[in-house]
Image (cartoon, rainbow, N blue to C red; front, side, top):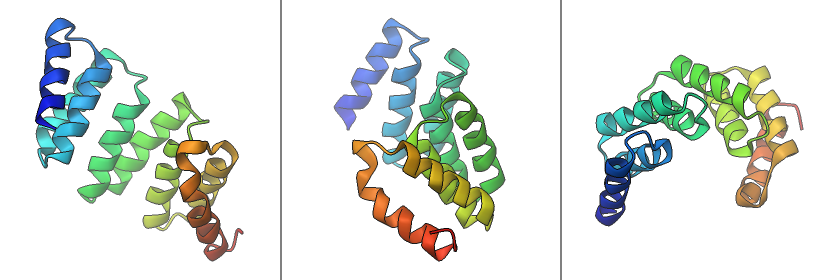
Length: 138
C-alpha cells in the first residue's frame, strides 16, 4: 500500500490535475484509515474532473460511513446522472436508499443494477434478487 501511495503521489507531481491518481490515492488513504486526507484527494479529483463518478462514489461511501445518508444519496444521485449504466454505482445507490428506508428508490436502483450488471459484479446478483424479494419487488 505504501508503494502504491508513493506511485500515486509521483503521478500527481508529474500532473497535479491527474484526477485518477488523486482518486486512487484517496482510496489508498481511506483503506489506511486516513479519512480526511482521502476526502481531500477525492475533492481534488472532482475539481480536476467534475464528472468523475469514482470520486463521487468514494465521497458517498465516506458520507455513509459517517452517518450522513442524505449527503451520500445526493452524491450518488449526481453520479447516476453522469453514468446511469454503471452497475456498481446503481448498487451503492440502492444500498444507501435501502439503509435509509427509501423502499421505492432502493427497488429502482436494485433493478437498474440487475439491468446493467457486468462480470465484475455478478457475485452481487443473488444478494440483490433476495433483497428485492424481501422488499416485495422480486
